[in-house]
Image (cartoon, rainbow, N blue to C red; front, side):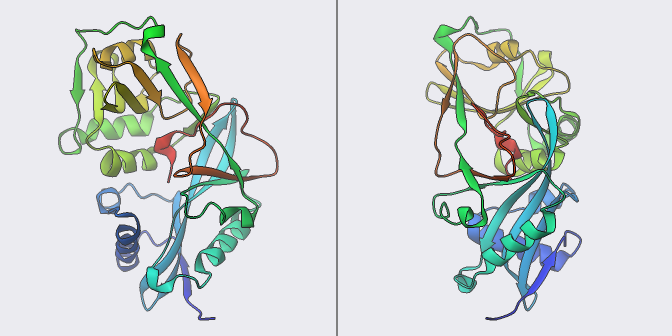
Length: 294
């Protein structure tokens, strides 16, 4: 078996960082430069990569997470950005990286987890990970008392014009749910602001709340609600729903209850949750915030 150099934590190595990004673009069509060139890559995100002649050929990254579950804080390790150059596949490189990461962190964190697509659903159970099904939390507006506010001031934000405000909210956000939420997640939030949802950032001015959202036909998808203090969610919803909106889907575990809300376990092979833990921590209806996925 060929031997390749194993490197990690190279966010200050420009050559390796650019090679990592090139592989990410090739694998996921995702350009990390808009994120790390602004300084959002911090010491919580650690890539572990095999390198061949200065080129990153396989990677699995660790993101150190502070996770609240049922009101208690846990140290979590989230594994993501798992990728191998097509010319180096079927050599067991991803397996070696997983084994290395699991050995390095096994005694320092409470649990490990990751999200996988349908091409690798059989891969992670080989390392002891168990698949758990998350829930979809939705609101039927017809069954709620929420009335659309026609006087609400909602402004679409852009990275070019509103970066200082966005950074302030990402750094100082209020934790919304004691059932399941994350703390100190500024780096990943800025990843989603700058690379994923940069066209879906809206600011409810009167309520000083940022909402990441997209409307699809009669359904409003809310990816996150970000406020410096506990948000008035019903007022936020009244400010952002349209006349045609019939349903709201929350891509996180709500820390609130509104008449007309339901939670349904929804298996998702495109973003399947796998967890490695010694005790059962996640029970009932829950969903990791989409903006905490790495």
